[in-house]
Image (cartoon, rainbow, N blue to C red; front, side, top):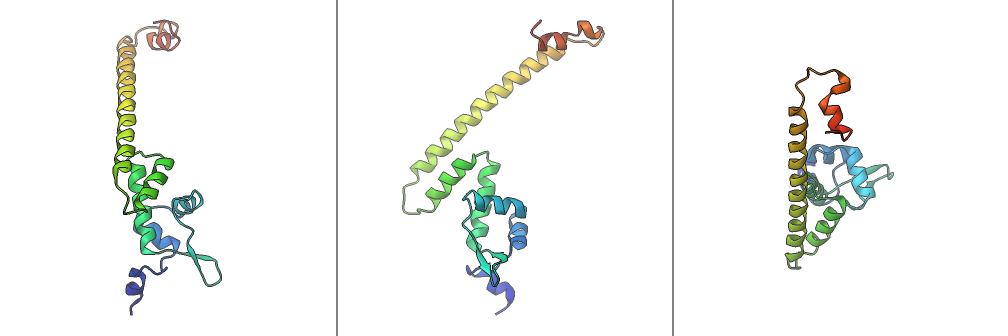
Amino acid sequence: MSPDARRSLDAPGLVIGELATRTATSPETIRYSERIGLLPPPQRRGSGRYRMYRAADVERLAFVRRARALGFSTDAVRDLLGLADDPERPCGEVGQLARAHLMAVEDKLAQLTALRDELQRVIGACAGEHAMAECRILGALSGQS
């Protein structure tokens, strides 16, 4: 059997650098994910020096990366992984977590929109012709507008 065929099995076969490459994740992030429990502790090769990962670890780390890219918190990712680890369970809880996250994103968007509008107002009040002591942007930031 070729080395690539052996690596494709779910037996441990990937060192941390290979896992990092396959998932576009730094080795430091992989080790951190292990420490906080998002990835299970890997098996060790021979002397115990090298971490050995399985195909399931590639999939799990890819899941973590996608969930984090969508803005889920570490705790929410942990909850999602726990739910995913129980394939017979109804998926309603996943929907609840996703809806709660969407509401938080929408709240953040509303806050950012209000922030943008206020910055546009403050910037629009300054044509740049005044001395610093009369700067309307600085005045607005100090509560004088």
